Image 1 (spheres, rainbow, N blue to C red):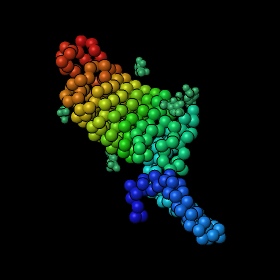
Image 2 (cartoon, rainbow, N blue to C red):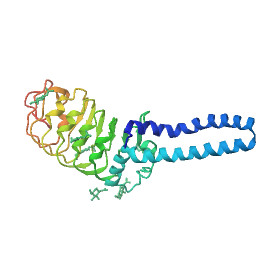
Image 3 (cartoon, rainbow, N blue to C red):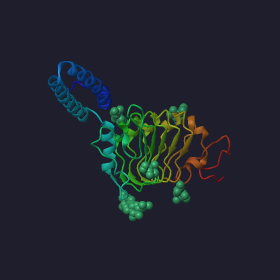
Amino acid sequence: MLWNSMEATSLRGSIYQLRELVSPCMICFEACGISRGMKMRKQVFSFFYILGFLWVFWVSDLVKVTGNSEGDALNALKTNLLDPNNVLQSWDPTLVNPCTWFNITCNGDNSVTRVDLGNANLSGQLVSQLGQLANLQYLELYGNNISGKIPEELGNLTNLVSLDLYLNGLTGSIPDTLGNLKKLRFLRLNNNSLSGTIPVSLTTITSLQVLDLSHNRLTGHIPVNGSFALFTPISFADNPLNGRRVSQHLPADVDIKGRV
Ligand SMILES: *[C@@H]1O[C@H](CO)[C@@H](O)[C@H](O)[C@H]1NC(C)=O
Ligand SMILES: *[C@@H]1O[C@H](CO)[C@@H](O)[C@H](O)[C@H]1NC(C)=O
Ligand SMILES: *[C@@H]1O[C@H](CO)[C@@H](O)[C@H](O)[C@H]1NC(C)=O
Ligand SMILES: *[C@@H]1O[C@H](CO)[C@@H](O)[C@H](O)[C@H]1NC(C)=O
Ligand SMILES: *[C@@H]1O[C@H](CO)[C@@H](O)[C@H](O)[C@H]1NC(C)=O
Ligand SMILES: *[C@@H]1O[C@H](CO)[C@@H](O)[C@H](O)[C@H]1NC(C)=O
């Protein structure tokens, strides 16, 4: 295919502009038709009517082939989840883009910026395709029954501001790749069953303001440098972490549960 995704995006816009584009043409040829007689007018009108229709079909076919990769990524998530309350009913993968789906927000370029599905009674697993939502800023999936691992591909969401996966049944370790999320301000993974050590890569996220890793099965030491200098033992409570945390605000041998 000669068409790249940018061209597809502009073509998608073109569908909506078609009506505005066609109407002045119709007016013009209507005027021509009047001066040359009724018969000629009708012929010209039919010709452009057919041409317009053909163009619409050609463009929508092109969009089907090249467009809606973000819709496909979200549909992969839907397919992997159990949804007893039918909150994902509006997620129709045959639409031009996912921007009209409930609990999805897009920017002006029809690219997904928010997924808001907190407390939606969803179970099942996350999918690696979520990493394809290049403009995603908020991934809100807290308070569900989501199990399995956090996909390392979430580290590709470099525009992410908030990753809220708390109160689920997630297992496995926290991916190192989350350290690539340089715009992240909120990282709440508390109340899951996450194991392994806390990735030191997270200390390099200078924008991080809120971190909650409490109520998991994390082991090893708590990093104290970089962005982690901000966080108190509350962020790490109720984990079998063995490290004693040195903090400016607390005595050197206060452990993660706040006991001396
Ligand atoms: C999802 O969208 C529905 C319909 O707009 C709304 O009622 C519900 O509150 C939304 N859920 C979340 C978690 O935003
Ligand atoms: C969540 O779904 C389960 C079935 O999987 C159902 O028994 C339960 O009532 C639902 N809870 C809510 C709050 O809708
Ligand atoms: C949570 O998900 C598990 C499977 O992952 C399922 O067995 C369980 O019934 C679910 N619980 C609720 C309340 O939906
Ligand atoms: C996304 O992340 C994975 C693993 O972290 C990587 O292998 C892959 O190449 C990335 N994909 C894109 C499109 O950047
Ligand atoms: C997280 O789990 C702890 C311990 O089970 C519980 O006390 C706390 O209320 C939970 N947090 C939330 C936000 O439900
Ligand atoms: C914190 O220390 C670890 C080594 O213990 C290092 O890998 C990491 O880059 C440091 N973070 C910052 C922000 O300097």
